[in-house]
Image 1 (spheres, rainbow, N blue to C red):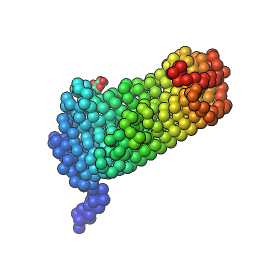
Image 2 (image 1 turned 60 degrees about the vertical axis):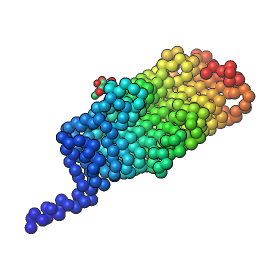
Image 3 (image 1 turned 45 degrees about the vertical axis):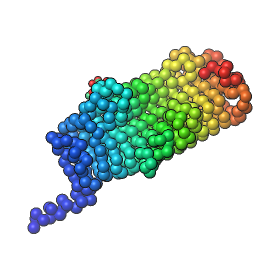
Amino acid sequence: MKLSVIVLVGLIPTFAAGVIVQLDCARDLGEQIETAEVFSELHGDGSCTWYVSKPIKVLVPMTIRKLRVVLRSSEGIPMIKILARSVTMTEFELIGNNKMVAGTAREALVQVFKSAFHIARGTFRNSTKDGVQVRSIAGAPPITGGVLRDLVGRHNHRDLVSLTTLDGGKSLTRNIVVENIRAYGSRDRGAVEISDGVEDIFVRSVYAENCYYAVSIQDHGVSELETIRRVFVSNVVAVRSHFAVVSQVESIRHGDVSISRVIAKNCEQALELKNLDWVRVDDVRVIAASTTGYPVEIKNCKDLKIRDVSFVGGGQARGAILIADSTNVRIAGITLSEKTNVFFGITIFRMFERFQPGLQISQVDLNAATGRQINIRITPPHLRVP
Ligand SMILES: *[C@@H]1O[C@H](CO)[C@@H](O)[C@H](O)[C@H]1NC(C)=O
């Protein structure tokens, strides 16, 4: 009688959560994951390391926990490909083969191709490319919905998190939340890349140290479908990096972008924003920027509002903020502390041939500028100092 009660209690939660499978440290990890049942929960014990030399495919919805995996291959290949919806991966450490790969073929450690993923509490190291890349498949429905949270990256060749599309934006990715992300030592890239036509992206609490950037908005100039729309970026700290937030864009315009609460400390520049329509920049602190140009540069933007940007320290720089070829610009609350060493406060360049209306500047304290506080130039582009 007592025995049957115990069996019953044991069965109910197992059924609700799917089959729980203890992963075997001595067996091939790929085989265990590739043959797992729908909605099963695969648990590592957190103490063993699997060495893999070919990509592992996740083929059905499942939860995978407590993995430590090292990629051992001289090729630039992915470690895990998520090819099913509703896959959760938590508590993991994935180590790439950056040191072993000589060629130019590089891939993310984890590639996500389907919707409704949840990847959290993990570390990615030494990837040949990204930690995790979310990218749709050609001709497939868009990737819609997914969470990337509590992730750390160290020495990845490219981004810790990369959100992108395929076929010049034809196969979409949208509604992704990226939260509590830390990247160290990605000198060529950074913590989060948002690229090529992704939409409805929420990025918050990002830290980047010794990277090229914390967050980048990018396109590859392939087609108008690469237009990125509706992006929120907030609570960003960049330390000893080149940029906190940067647009690395070609000719395509992107829009509806809100960037708030950014601190750039000992970075070359804080922000470089380009080709954005409707952009809000709010509450930026620039500490000891090392550029000799402008720590904040805005180029070719439209309907732009910049509010509460303060500068302290840094070397000798041409100016604090440069705004070029932008229309309908409102700037409020810019402060230069005594300890800055900038020549111009705000420099505005406008194209000679086109009258560009709508400039408002208010509530600024630019007394510490050693040259002109507000420097407005109307010049033909070919005469312009970039
Ligand atoms: C990862 O890269 C770092 C820095 O380049 C290196 O010191 C470390 O040995 C690498 N680790 C592995 C496991 O390859």
